[in-house]
Image (tube, rainbow, N blue to C red):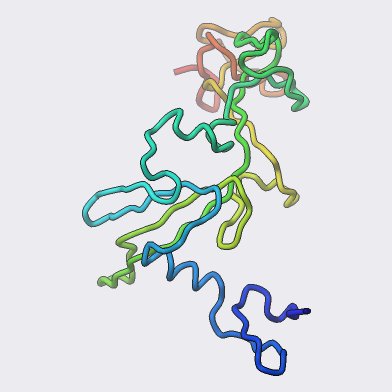
Length: 216
């Protein structure tokens, strides 16, 4: 049976004659209503509900009953996050725990591998005030599975719009690799050659800051 592209994302009713009658309720609207009543279960998702007035947070979905840390390692966006060595061309040379993994820059920069995830945010309670509307109660969920009502987090989109399976964050604050010296600075550098020197993420380097490149 062909539902027709015009019915994408909509609830539909099949009439006695077998024809599709378009519904007037969007699936996203149904999901929002179910979340507001606590009757919605997402797939492979953990979440929190925030009550801004009472300053409380409670775990929802598969996060219920879990504690921070290893309880969440079964979800790739948490358990799959780890340190790795990355070459200048973006190649991952080793992961933490591999025999050739190094923190000192000898096997590449030290980065954090973050697998992609999808998110959903739906205001549950919205109230009006003098300047407009404010969210009083919020539902936030993340999942490693693409599903209805969830969006890919924008950090996992390249500049050209390509979907990325992971991103890399620096494990350490930006230090300096001095090209002329062929070494990382463990102390305050006297300056930075912005045309040649390299911002680095390795252990035992002092972060640089400021337009002159001097450490503070």
